[in-house]
Image (cartoon, rainbow, N blue to C red; front, side, top):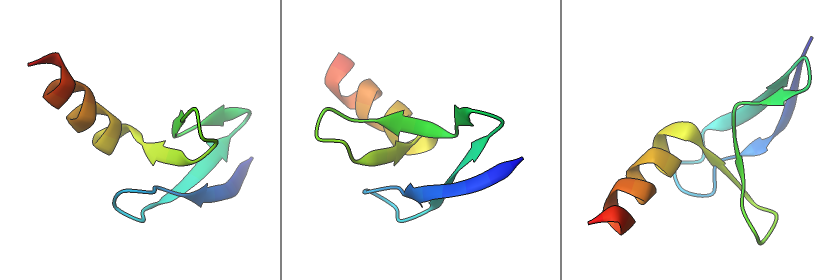
Length: 47
């Protein structure tokens, strides 16, 4: 089952829940970010 749960706060891509698993990350402020944007942010902060 696939359900739309929101959009990425960075790139506005739609984020879906697939059988209980979200295709992104819920941030501390309860917004969503897709895995691609999250990976980019974590690479920036790791430097």
